[in-house]
Image (cartoon, rainbow, N blue to C red; front, side):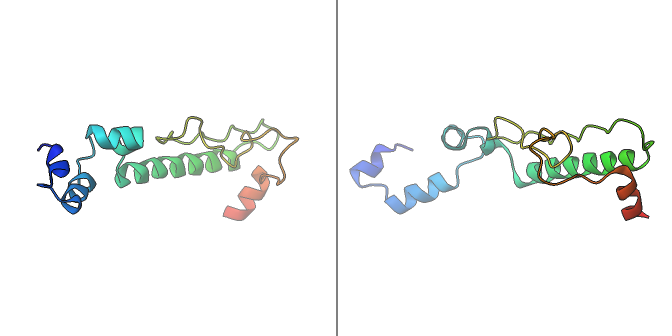
Length: 116
């Protein structure tokens, strides 16, 4: 297809818009517009979210079943998503320095009471 056909009047603006809208995910145009995010489907985002949730559940389980005097475990880091240069800070204990946190994370005892 020659894009000059649009300029020459042989290709309507509507047809051109439909063709651009339905470009394949791996096209250079979508890669130029959306970057790495163009390669991720809804399924990829859902899988990344599921991995994050499983890591959080494992962290909670390990935190609840640790000795009360043991050092707290680091909160799991989320799977990096396209378009984010730095990982989104998680709401766990290592997300922000202790002096700037506004809410207190639950202790192992509080988590054990919640899940029992």
